[in-house]
Image 1 (cartoon, rainbow, N blue to C red):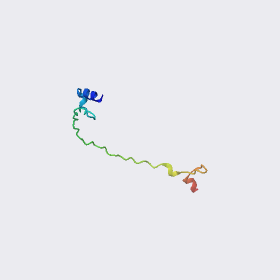
Image 2: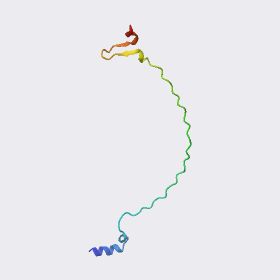
Image 3: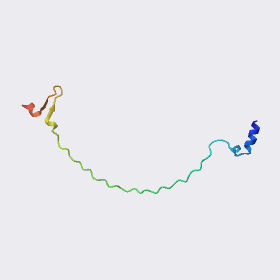
Image 4: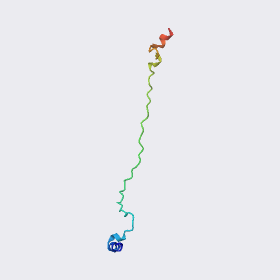
Length: 75
């Protein structure tokens, strides 16, 4: 039985198959245009000073929940 199958396979293209994957044809790669690197101007960083907050004038005491200012404590 095996001999009959081998004889039939020898008459076809399948008889030449040894194993592994058939190499696929690779599509030609498209050439990408060269991109020139152009320096981008960076704007100067303007640091705006933050005005001082009124947090120094307020003292919050959590246990009593009472809010008092520093001026009231001095009196």
